[in-house]
Amino acid sequence: MAKEKNTSPKDQFRQELRKCRTAKQWTHRALASRLNCGHSLVGAIERGTRNPQLRFAEKCDEAFGLDERFVKLWKRMNNAFSGAQWYAHWADEIEPEARTLRSWVPLMIPGLLQTEEYARAMFTLGIVEEEEVEDHVRARLARQTILGREKPPTLWVLVDEWALQRQVGPPEVMARQLDHLLTLSGRSRVHIQVLPADPETTAGLAGGFMIAEIDDQPTTVYIDSAAQAEVTSDPELVSIILRRYDKLRAGALRVSESQQVIKRWRDSWTSK
Image (cartoon, rainbow, N blue to C red):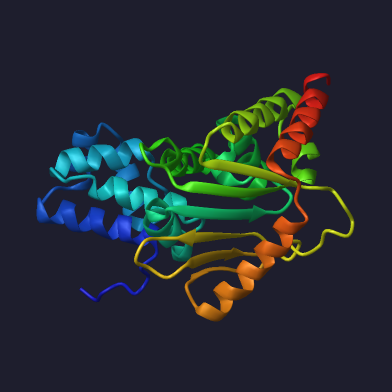
């Protein structure tokens, strides 16, 4: 059989599923009976016309006696946003190993700080297909587990003030989201600074980015934009992003001032 060239996380999952199933000499029906699902679903996932759910991945690992092989593939697929392997590399390998993370995301609350409700509201705005919303929400929440570790990374986040006043979901969702920011800002390793809604503050409008510092590895950046995104440790690009971050932070409010701004907008949403 010719080797398939597409190695996106989704294709890796379906290829591994077919490989494991045929190694066991199981039909679609035989595997489906072990997964407690319809045999047509197994076939559709192997063909790539349906996306697996987390429970499906867990049952596959159980059926084949594997140690989270399918769960890890599922996480890569759902952290990758439409199969973008650059993002899977960041979410699976860079972010969890970082001792310091610096973040700037214009116009929305950064993913690491989003509540489940806010994330769900974001994904239902047409960013992903309706049937994939819950998988993406779980993947986003899975990223946030790094903040609950015994030794979490130090997190420096610049939040756009426009994101505090831009409605995502009902007003109560916004109020709880801003309450969550206030709670996180009380942690010793989380530093949230608000960039005021000032027309002269334009250094970060070109796109968001994150900077990861990892022990014994070069500083790595994740650069996002409407057209493309990438993960790189190229010294020249890293230097550009570091300068841009410093310029943005120079215009940001102090942490204590930022907390007051967040409280003000929280109260505004609470009163609606």
